Length: 245
Ligand SMILES: C[S@@+](CC[C@H](N)C(=O)[O-])C[C@H]1O[C@@H](n2cnc3c(N)ncnc32)[C@H](O)[C@@H]1O
Image 1 (spheres, rainbow, N blue to C red):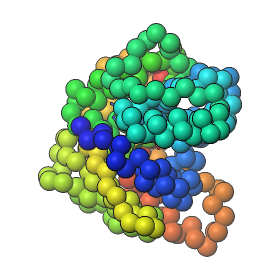
Image 2 (image 1 turned 90 degrees about the vertical axis):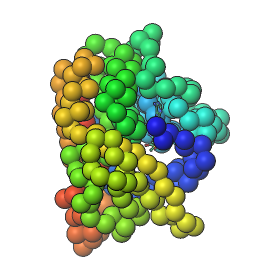
Image 3 (image 1 turned 180 degrees about the horizontal axis):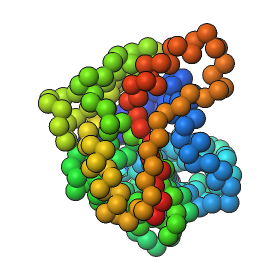
Image 4 (image 1 turned 120 degrees about the vertical axis):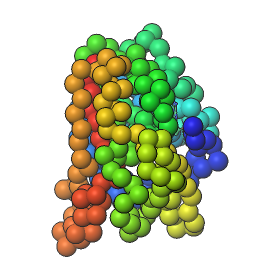
């Protein structure tokens, strides 16, 4: 599994400032999260804590962020030390989460697309299910498993591009190239079909599974530029899922 974010942790943090992240990714994810006031929330694959902090700011009572990458957790912890929000960050593998402190809500932005096999996907979903109380919710965003990325349009105008390594089949790597002002960097994740995801969710004990498309925030004001977003919204490279345990 390509999960080594240590060398690109700082660049990844800056790529999170691209407008599509704010006006499409964050907007849609936070709509699905809803009002987290008073809830205990676990952010799995929290990275440097982008969504972990956002959810705490939105009123969650207790927030924990876990990630496999020591470099990402160090970036998250540095920010927590600089501006304490009372978030606990620690290194942990999604596949090994326990049921010792179940949460009301677990979120994961771009975790499941790191599974390259059905077994890995199921191990992640089982860990996430263990992290939740009965009736708890899981909200996630990933590379869109309903899209054939070998036929994807160019997303260059949004600041990134995708390409496929090899034939399009279960486990095929998808390469994402992010363009920043001072250069570009790449990450790779994997294609597993929507059916594979459905099966993993059900097998892990999730009873309701709802898929959602990305939406554009009304806060994106320049109306004349709305056409700018059509490629991203009509051929969405990301998909959102909400599951109830
Ligand atoms: C694309 S980053 C997303 C970070 C953050 N959620 C965000 O949206 O900014 C994917 C993260 O998944 C983490 N990751 C990959 N496999 C993991 C696993 N099995 N358990 C926990 N974290 C994992 C990586 O270390 C990386 O920080």
